[in-house]
Length: 395
Image (cartoon, rainbow, N blue to C red; front, side):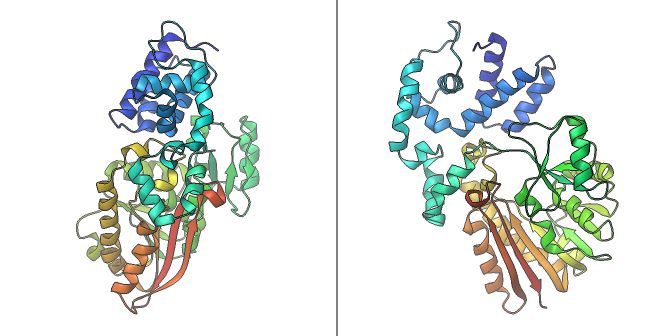
């Protein structure tokens, strides 16, 4: 297979932006696609696969070519994808046959090399998860599929499947989740369907969180770290627009995105609210339920954003743990006695999850009761890694 020169140079520049300058891969890719409308589907797939797989296997690729240079990593990835490097490709590393042969030596390398993660993260993950760590890494290094949540305010799962089929998109139900659909591996949902309102892109693990609240008509529910509102939209559908949902975030742009999504989804029960320094005292105690979908390391989502493992630093992880503790220490003031607290992260580290809840319970003896905990494992489910703790406020 041949590599076109213009795609080669564009992909290399994008790779340097992501791997050297630590830009967010998704954002860089979206901007590149917008700037290059002439790229066809095959071109976009080539660029995306190169970037995602190079970020995913950066350290293993470095072992294969014995180099950290971005161009060498990209060249190795192209060879593994079955491409022949053209003469104009300025690459002076190992020849293709040596790279392919050296793959046989990867299983004998240290875990951080064969699973392609930084040393510090490997040490941390093993210290927290022990023998489970290797299996989690193997699962998180798999390519992700696209999953959808059917918006029951506008349709049902059976009708959604038929609607998607009419638009040449095959979708199948996900077992044990009544509103979840799976797309075939590698399938990308067209933009027009994404913006229709009948479906939302949402991983099955994420779809497992909001139902724990069991929203009821007339309840006031606060989604305290709503972002662009995936769980707020899910709560609106689960309550059939009969609950009052306050979606809060520090990022006004994300709240604007949520307002646009809510309009498409006909989620009329959502009210957005920018977070202020004293929001917890301004709103308390009125809530029947409170979701703290907390800032976290995001390690449970590495299959979707493999560049994260190279951007994340120990100091950042310490910072998000501090934020988690602060949120759990203040935001429950917004809950009524008898109200439900749902703490969630997309991390698989106990230090961000059950350990934070243990500290909350220890610091508030008799004030909360733990009802349920979910640790959704990528190794066990094949989906993203999530944690959820459901508590009730006693007093």
